[in-house]
Length: 330
Image (cartoon, rainbow, N blue to C red; front, side, top):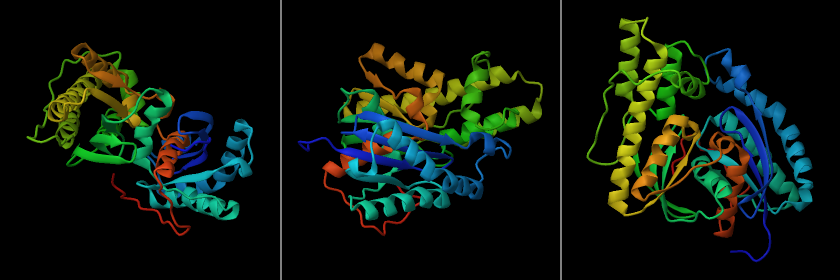
């Protein structure tokens, strides 16, 4: 660990949120400004990459200025510039990354590119000062579903991943089919609270820790097409129950495999109230459950700054020509 405070400027623009944050020592958030494009993309039923990129360009300088003002700092107070460089939409990524590269060059400060998925995991470090590796992380988002063995802050191993659709993608598709619109996850969660899990949907199991959500997604679509008058709240509740069971069953297998009894949730889908409650039930079995504050589950720059800090103190530095990698893996 470094002996003095390290102030990291995190930059996030991988999808439809433009965010800049100032974080001290990886855990203390001094500011976390998020400019969301949800209202813009609602009109199209999903994120339009070209529109997202254009809006990032318009917002990035303003958001960075506000983040510094809220942190009561200037650019000269920043020690490290940490932009997301993947995974995500390549045009969107390039906006935040280019801004970060230019800033690091102008300020003569270290540039530390951050894997967006590491950022989601690091959101837990902000919410929980006591959380330290090793632990297992259930990472669920619009583009990813993974069980990650976090051996150390910058040493991770993916133990299981989806073989087809990510869980967040399945939520969005279900929302679209039943007419809820975008963003699907929060709307399915809200409607499901009015329903009962009366419908049995299929679960796909593998011998290892991999996932598959294409089957249940197709089952929901087929059921709705055959019976358009099906109770939509019950459908959403039944879908939530089934995917939650899949997640919990696999994490229990991972616990037995690794003998780790500390679990963290991460990613946008970890904001789902049913999933959070189902994982909390594991505490009755002696498993410690960590989950980020709701505002840190979705894309934000504070989590990126936190991950950037741990990469920085581990010695990571990137060249000024760092490029975006839209399909970056953990």
